[in-house]
Image 1 (tube, helix red, strand yellow):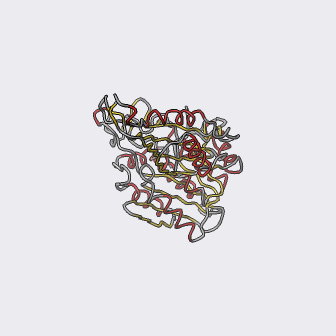
Image 2: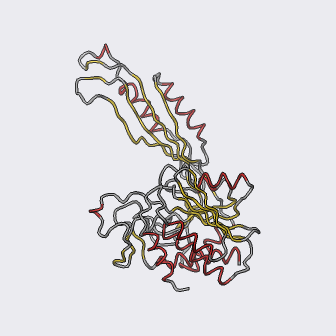
Image 3: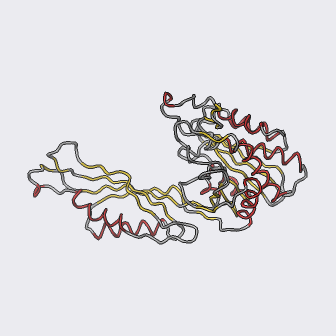
Length: 377
């Protein structure tokens, strides 16, 4: 199969304005290609989200490729050098919303499967693809619902590769073998509104909160481990006051987030925050939102196979990393023995003029095929 097949399929997907959670016709394109090479496809629509799970084979081990067809909004159209949903080759790069995150990876999944099945029609084990259109949005009706359905019927994955953009400088320099958990808090500290000239008749929640917030910001939550950096705490928003300069506010609203390692638990972090707030005598309400637990695939067969494939296809020694935000890997890990994320350079994701190097597109497909051969040929 010509190297241009992956580029052609990527362009076909990129031309669809699939702003989350609208698949906008991407998945039917993929399903047609997969059914043509012997995959059985289950369309799984939950709420307003289209998902599908495709599998070829019944035996183990099961190697699953996972990804999302939805993209973030393009932003101001006038700032794009070329239209975001008109894939354009320019200066050795392919420009479009989703070029790096992550329609090109999905195109590479499919063309790699096509070549592998043509070469090994009776391959050992099984291949699968788990595709959603709800990764960039709320993620309520996407991968998590598919994983629930697979788990309910006792279907588990031996090896999973999520095609998120993981490379820092060039394709193959980084494999994500885990991600930190994400825990957010919405804190309301209560005071008493009053005239700024009569502070004795009011209670200023900003003044009360300042020492507690300083302590939260200075606290060492854990020291990390060989795979994870220390858990981090960041305040993202603070709001208090009416906008007038002569009014002491009645409440202070603070939003914060933990990106936490496997050395901490969400329950433990919550308790420590409450202990600090209580120690400072604050009157407050605190609502928590857990968007993902930390997950980890320790160095083992899948990481070693991926590193060997990268060495052969890219000439690099890939580093293992758990940095960055969350991904659907946090859901899939519940049914996957080993899971990694491996995809193109992430420098332009979610930006104006998102792009991928043209040379990396056939290389990415070859990399996925190499991993298939090592695990299933």
